[in-house]
Image (tube, rainbow, N blue to C red; front, side, top):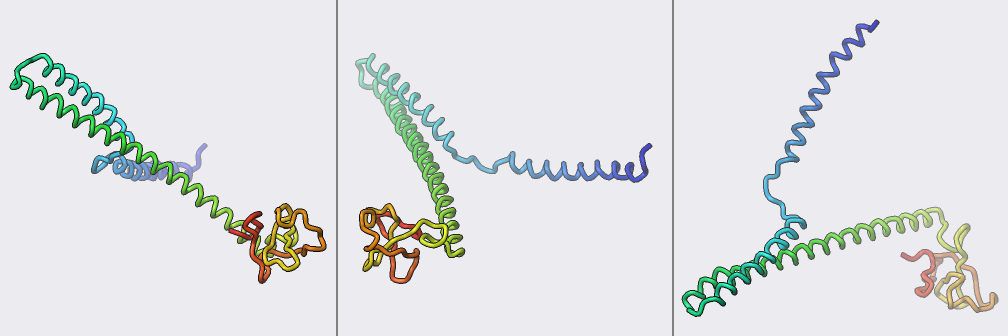
Length: 192
């Protein structure tokens, strides 16, 4: 048998779900209606795809009509209605295609920029974490960094500057040590 509290809970649930359904319906009604036409990439592509062939067709029809009459006053309407209108549609269709291409380029640039920002954030977070731990290159756990005896730059072990030098000419250093700058050839750790 069911308990009285279960029946009361069931009686409350439909009212709550009806209220949430009404809220959802109101929210979705605003999404369905747009107050203005938004020009999107697709509309630009469709407009260009329709206008350019239509312009070519009007131009050909205007030429065909004007070519089949010898009287100038009969050729002018064909020139105006077919030639100029067709040429205008070709130019406007080409501009729509150009707008479509530009919007695609902008979208691609934004994607690349977002990717680069994410990469930069990850790199800076990693460098900040390593610096906070005192674990920037040359210290415990990091790759060893070297400098020449009188040098002011630190290098990775595989850097061509220190690769073939004897160990007597090198000293082990830490990234960020006072008076030392990172090598621009090997891109030693600690540089951003």
